[in-house]
Length: 360
Image (cartoon, rainbow, N blue to C red; front, side):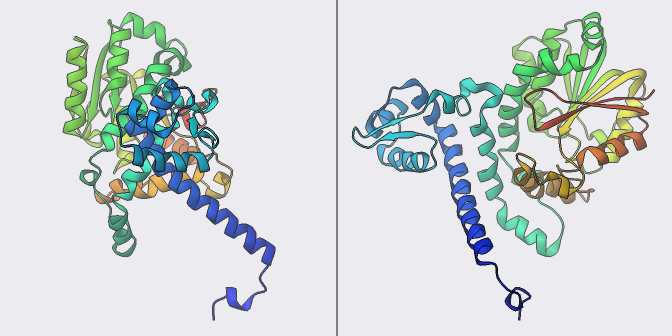
């Protein structure tokens, strides 16, 4: 007999939990449809239309009416879109559009929804890892760099120059005067290219082990005519630079490294004595019990389990995971040689911590 079968069941607690699970299933289904709404442009179309029928919406979006009508059914029952039964019309309120359309910039949560169906593509491989150990390699996430470039690109555009870099006292002045900067795990390189354009006297280098991502970064730099930005395909754990950079950045790139401790040590070596390491990573506790009230705690752990952690384990890495937390981050930075570590937050950004680390 199971332990549960021998205990008295609190019926009200059981019924409340069943309701919670139905709500979870509904929200999971809604996330998949949010991703479709983003990819098909339906949220953008609805934001530009007055209350309209499914036929009018499909015509404007250039999509199949039958599929649009069923998708609208999800959005109405999820209370994302308003429906007038008498007129047969659908309306996306502006208060909702501000979190679902391309015009929302970094507030567009529909972009984040794309991660869930991407993770679904590797579910069977993850199940096998539960049984056999190991991990799922980057090659099984063909759309990862595209999705991450879209997610981070809008955030960089809105906040990097105006909000993030000024967190480091005196950094803007130094960038204007001209310093050497590196971004590790640069992905498609948009952060480097933004900084290179904003600070033409400084010199920028992006490192990433993805040839596809680095080529995208080079293409963007070439299109913008950025002579002060360059990119290298490099495993940053094996970075052999010493006293080369005045500023090194890492945007949500440390926690999924195979050897994060080695990466942080390499960063410390590559920095000049008066250099700064600006590390942006997930704002969470290293203790799961302290993340219970995190606004997107389940999302962080799920993405970690099915991407961040597993790609590290696939390389026989540490599998640090996205929820490594502030306590562990501080500890690892100290062990890497950073004697001064300050953690800052940006108003309105509940997802990230901004670590400002120095060697002295």
